[in-house]
Length: 215
Figure 1 (cartoon, rainbow, N blue to C red):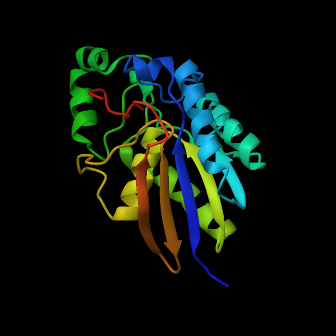
Figure 2: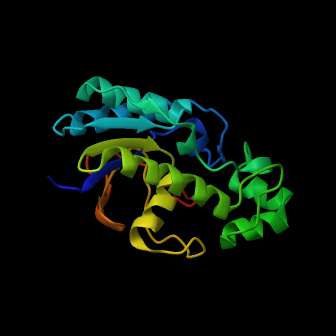
Figure 3: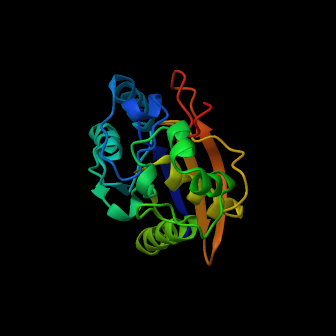
């Protein structure tokens, strides 16, 4: 029996705040019309795949994306609060430009990806956020060795998982895309070998937005 775990990672569909380049974090913003269409398109594509389990962030933009997929694949996603986006503290609700103007020092650390610098207003540092995601990922590995699972979450979550799978540091500038509702396939082989099989598969989508504000 194979011990390989295959994971399909999906970032939630677009929201109005994505379109406005507004930082969401733990703020529960629903999908917009484009996001719902993206979720449906991703669901149609994933209908050809078999999954042993599905998990989602409990925030509605991810949970509703997962629900659309689940209706196609016949599998309800289990909500996991540990898969929530990074808590952006005082940045939540602001555009990137507004955050830079109102909190220039903190924003400089944010843009530079300073790992241990927490965001103002109770926000998570990258180190704390990455630890939360790594723990959640390890738990899924323990539960589903030898299976194929679906995980629906957020741009920041996928950023951390990509770094875990590729060996990139938290502070390294991002040089990979994380479009709304794209498919991203990674693999875990015991004892601790991660690899990326395919990333940012978006041929089924129309002009999906990346997480970064210049997209």
